[in-house]
Image (cartoon, rainbow, N blue to C red; front, side):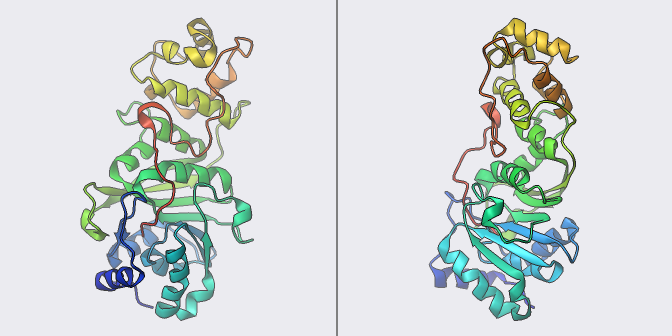
Length: 313
């Protein structure tokens, strides 16, 4: 089996009249060493079923196929989705039956949209503009996922893996921690992409774990997180006022949870946020909408907006 080289990638893109677009967050990986590193760091087993988001021209797909039982490639671009099986057939015909291509938006894909074999791992070069919403959506809707290895913008990688007290700790950090243990898994240089981006990238590894033990729902906890970081400079007493139905109600909930009302959101763990959600005075009548979805990048300065499609491998 041969991987796609830089010249072949550009030739294939020309043939398909594909040009990487900023709107879709497309930056194709053209370095074979990088895709091999991603597969190695992912720690995959032969029985793993991998979901790959935005396979693009197939660089990472070709590196994944020999290592796992199946690759489910979720691609929103019909041209790329049609081409991927042809590329695999040309470079690794003996592995073609391991590939399933799903033409879908990764931000909206549900278990019913995928093959019967449940995905056990997410390995992807995620589009920069929607990486956080995509990974949170998949962690929520695909409970069979046990491990994740994603390549994202370095700043996003720092946020996802940040610990409480860090300057970049925020909504992505807390929501990712609800699902998994998260760590930085190495840097990625700019020159491995085409076109070369103007930002650095990094690898993020996640290992699924049980969410915090709490009587609050995920939506209730995420609503607290969104409110706490919507106005980072405010104390929790002030930041959670609209969520709780007033500053006094927020203070009561915080004290009942054992949290100093003068603290700020970046000091709290996901378990702390769960305790706050548990102690909300439901009779207060106020509150921010308890329904921050799994795929929400977050509110305030942690928002992650953009078109959730895109192919970037």
